[in-house]
Length: 272
Image (cartoon, rainbow, N blue to C red; front, side, top):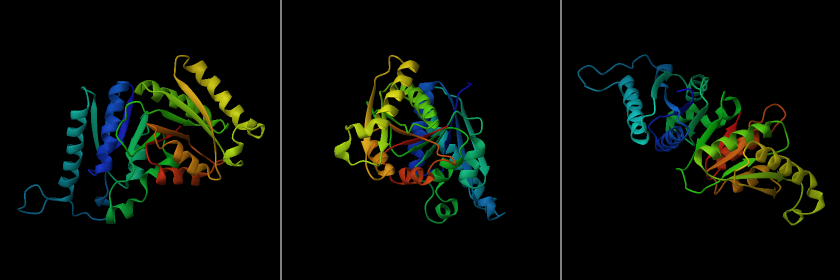
C-alpha cells in the first residue's frame, strides 16, 4: 500500500484510543498501519534480559508484549490492512519522529506513560507539534458520527496546507467541513461589523479555495473573536472530529499550539 498511517503505542489507555482512531482512518483511506513502540529502558540500563529462572520476565519481554498487544488490537479494528510493528529504543518523540519520515500521517494519544517514564519522555505531542515530518493527529476521543472537521485559517501560506489536509480528512471520514478564523483584536459584539473586513476576507478566500478543490463538499464558515486565539480555537474544536491547525514555524507563535494541545477537548491535527 502506498499510503501509510503511523501510530505511537505504549499500552496506555490514551494510546489504545489513538490506535483505534488511526486504524479506522487507515481502513477508510485504504492505508497500511505502522505501530511504533518507543522502548525507553535501554537508555538507562543494559539489564533488559529475562530474570534467570523466571519465565516471561525482563524489560525486553515487557516491551515486546506491549507491541504484540497493539498489533492484536489493530487486527481487531482493521479489515485486512497491512500492519507493520516497530519497536525502537529511544525517547518517544525522537522515535516517532524518525519512524514517521515516510508516513502520510502520525497519530498519537494525548498523553502516554505516566509517573517516572512520563517525566522522562516529556510532552510527546507538544514536542512533535514543532518538528513532525508529516501531519500529526493528537487523539483524545473516539470517532463520532456527524462531527465536523474544523479548519483554522489565518491568511498565511500555511492555511493552504490546513485547507488541503482538512478537505482530505473530511472526505476520508465522510463528514462536513467548517472553516474558522480568529480575530483577537475585537470584542464579540463587533463580530459582524466592517472592522472585521480582514477576517471576512480570509474566510471568503478559504471558502473559494475549498469550493474549487472539492465542489461537492458541505462547508460552512465562522469568524471567531476573543482576546486569546488559543482559547477561541479550543472552544471551536470542542464538538469537532478534528481541529486542524497550521504548523507555526519561525513567523508563528508556538505557544498557541502548545496551549491548544494541552487544553483541547477533542482531537487536534497539525497540518504539514
